[in-house]
Length: 206
Image (cartoon, rainbow, N blue to C red):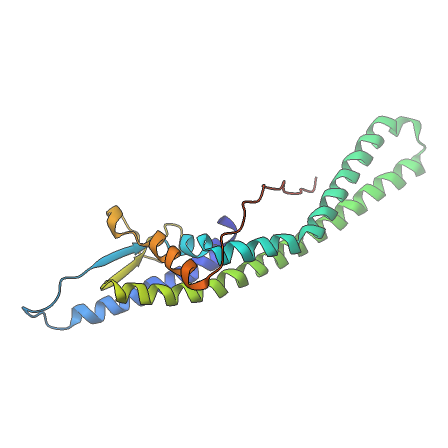
């Protein structure tokens, strides 16, 4: 999910950094003949969080919460389009004061829509970040238990767009535990998969 990449990148980097520190601590100890071979796994942490049933459910709730603002933006956009076309076609029949009044009304609506769009985007992004962060903490807990249960000595975050994180150049498919962790989390949370929702058009301000 593209809207939460910045926040997810920070969490993903933190997870990867923690894994790297653990790896350094482990490799710093003198090797012995009885030392177990390293067992490495790869997870797309951001993808794992956003793929959980709980995140999908809560994300849908956030979408519903902002439906009134989206509807208002769509209505303003339609009003601006209609009034702009009317002014263009009837402008020659209006006197100067009427043209100025209509132009000012259009400009006022554009400013209103822009303010609403900026406020909505800010509140929406904050709500998504909070939702992601809440679920990410619990996914991390499941990941820790899963890694220990399956004997992994190192788990690398394979998310490619995170900042200052390891870049996985190659990973065998059998090392990717993203789907397994998502399934383990869904089982533990008990949250059923939400029904698929039809995409909604994004409002724009012209």
